[in-house]
Image (cartoon, rainbow, N blue to C red; front, side, top):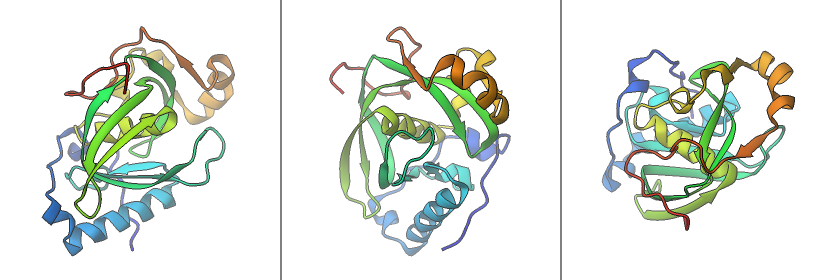
Length: 200
């Protein structure tokens, strides 16, 4: 496995929709190697998610995983690989929390996300899977799925005054806002094409 270079904001690949991959593509050695390298890169960078466009591959695949959460990572996330993920439902309730991104290093932003989502996708072997997520996992999944549509968390921020460098975020903002806050009236936070529902 190899550590891949992570694309930073400004690279065109981060702002274009990624191409879907077929079940057959997923069985190819090249894609399997890419997935392994993405997992290795995510772990090496200390991230909990990574989308293919972040490593200069405009493909609709992502990896998630954080088996031993620490600090502000409140929940363990099992190692997960998804291809062509599609939101089929999301709650209307929104939760605000701080987000960071490997492609936007050194910054944190206060972002609203749906508290619960349902996703359909292919796993790394090309099999259809259905996933229901809430809390931190739902947030990470929405963040990574945004990357597949050329969207970064900055685009989800309604108030850019809540964007801070990591050091200033830790010093001035964490105690002032808490770890997270729920607000049903927050702006819509699901990706395009999703179906809001209270039952997600």
